[in-house]
Image 1 (spheres, protein in one colour):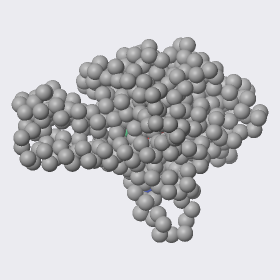
Image 2 (image 1 turned 180 degrees about the vertical axis):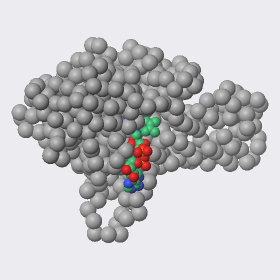
Image 3 (image 1 turned 60 degrees about the vertical axis):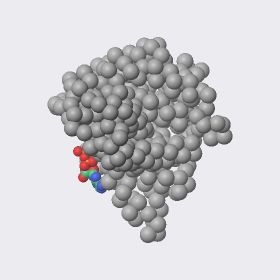
Image 4 (image 1 turned 180 degrees about the horizontal axis):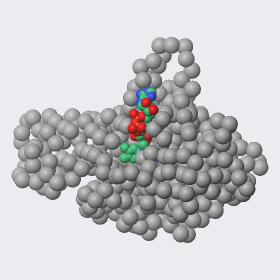
Length: 402
Ligand SMILES: Cc1cc2nc3c(=O)[nH]c(=O)nc-3n(C[C@H](O)[C@H](O)[C@H](O)COP(=O)(O)OP(=O)(O)OC[C@H]3O[C@@H](n4cnc5c(N)ncnc54)[C@H](O)[C@@H]3O)c2cc1C
């Protein structure tokens, strides 16, 4: 799925990263308002659409840019460097494109399932390419750490489709997405279904407040589904396809961490400029204690980034146990190092760097959110590593995020 033989990053990857980097300064400028008002970065998504990036991971023959998993990771890092909320919401959108595209292509389906899947996904891609549809992925329900277990949202078969009932928490892009792609189960059948709910559908309501610590532009409110009709053709994977993806391509759960590695880079950019005196009160680079802190920040960033790049380069269908463990450690390192780097940056830069005139305090708050993201939350992964190798248990049982 990812080309591991070519130079790294490839010319195409560099080209795509350079393209999205042109939006970086304006994303960073808008991040202030997005954070203060806890509002969705609508203008950033319009810009991403303009340069074709809503279709980044849609196959080229369907009008997309045909980016693979690793290329997406590099692009997400670059966006996260400038605006964490944009990177995280762009992740929710793009994850659906990856899941239905390159990931689904690598899974085994019957011929009949394959034909139906391609018809359905191509119609969905058309909405993205031609009408700029934005997709969201509200999976969380707050009742389990697993992605394929503990799902209480139901899809009851009815004429022409399903009726959805349930509640999703932290539904990023609430009020902004055109489609909310949910995981749910048919009553009496544990097979996970992946259904795309129209944001305008009757019976769908957004509930709750949204005034969180960080990643405020994600607008991750709760979604309530009461007999919401979803036509059969909006089932975006064959029944069981989501379970297969979880089992054979668990790397899917890493995608959130890309934004946090980018965020760390943004923190480094700021700290370097601040210590040099390019921004802020005056240069502080001569102070040995600050130099030491700055050195530690670089080490923590590079540890996370290098490990991430090793993992995304080898990411392919059916990883072995060592590869799976490496992927877990990569996510842990990214999600834990980000708040540590942010915290150190504040200490190194000093008191005035906390002022809202600077982006650092927002980055600090944004960085704090990563460790809580399921199903590969930091505590969950630490729990797996704590037992790894010590017992005769099959680690692949965790593929599905059980
Ligand atoms: C900014 C932001 C944006 C988000 N966007 C999305 C999104 O778009 N889509 C989406 O699906 N989710 C999203 N999430 C949700 C996220 O992935 C988690 O599901 C959420 O943070 C869980 O919150 P919780 O309060 O239920 O906490 P948790 O404490 O994680 O609890 C969840 C459940 O798991 C159990 N649990 C927790 N830890 C463990 C453990 N170590 N071992 C065993 N059981 C455990 C708890 O008892 C509980 O039943 C977002 C979160 C944030 C902060």
